[in-house]
Image: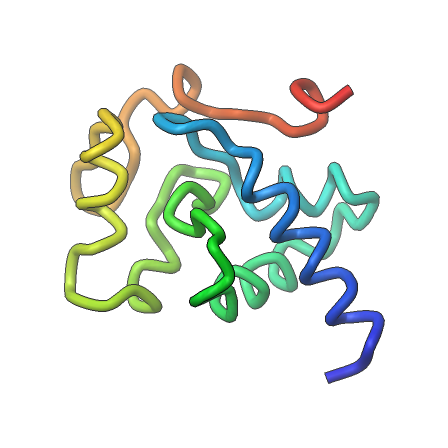
Length: 110
């Protein structure tokens, strides 16, 4: 992996650590905030590799609220369980009422 990619991953982790308890954001929202709007997939790769880095990766979902990264968590439903423990409703691997729990770093981190 290129050194600049590792630097980008660290920036992604910094933003993900700021997502408040009981809220979620998207891969694309983090990418856009970091000035790399077309890099949502790279943000996803960063989340996949975030294990052991004290990053609340369960709070980062796709733009439709789908738990697309759930297979990177131990157990079959750990991502959903972590979200539900924070009061977020998940049905069929999708966050319900996404707009009410969505945290946009571009708006929140001015």
